Amino acid sequence: MLVHRSGTARVGRLTVTGALLAAFSLLCTAPSSADTTPARGSAYMGMGVLAHDGRSGRAVTRKATQTEGVDVSSYQGNVAWSTLWNSGVKWADTKATEGTYYTNPYFRQQYNGSYNVGMIRGAYHFATPDTSSGAKQANYFVDHGGGWSRDGKTLPGVLDIEWNPYGATCYGKSASSMVSWISDFLKTYKARTGRDAVIYTATSWWTQCTGNYGGFATKNPLWIARYASTVGTLPAGWGYYTLWQYTSSGPTVGDHNRFNGAPNRVKALANG
Image (cartoon, rainbow, N blue to C red):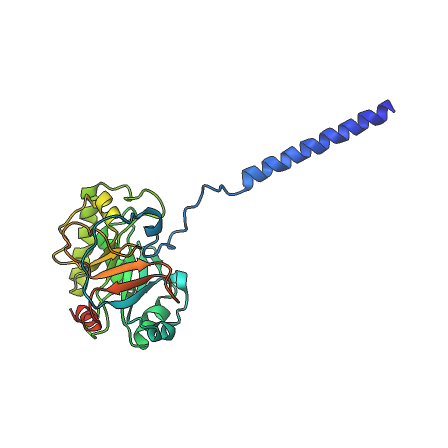
């Protein structure tokens, strides 16, 4: 009996030890719940708005007539453009590129599909100022779908500059360095296409990361992001917005926008 009890105790110790080792192994191999950094290339317009942007600020006067639009990325896949057109959406913007390392695999279906149903279309670039210069990213954008054509149905390209989904909010740059990076992108885009790019941003990010710089407002139309009943306070320099991304939970495609004017004004922007 003594031998039997000793054997039983040994088996029990082995069982406990095995369980502890198994648990330790799971802790070592399981992904950390804190590691939520998305994969490079997965960013999209407005990715950080819900998490970071406040909803306070004075209302900005808008025109009586506004024109509905959407923005899309690979996140939406193949888009039902006829459904959107029939619901009243008249323009669309498609993610073309990110940094100098990513192109949207659905770009052709999204960019050409919106055009083919009658929409005025455009393309945007998700900026990553910590990976390469503004000039390099502008050239990459133009070379991969972000150019402009004088057809009356193509909007100038959009610089999507907002929260960094992969790291430090301002991409490790000071306000003056960020302004220089943006200027580098805009000047290069203008030289390549003859058009001034639209700037997409949110007031809270712009204030934090550029020091609320107002020097681009005279040339570059503003696309403001704010998911509320009003656009609130605009970044410095801009007295009005041209486009407003007002929700990420709209019908058919989540990201819905309003152009601050009638459809003929959308066409006027396309025509330059």
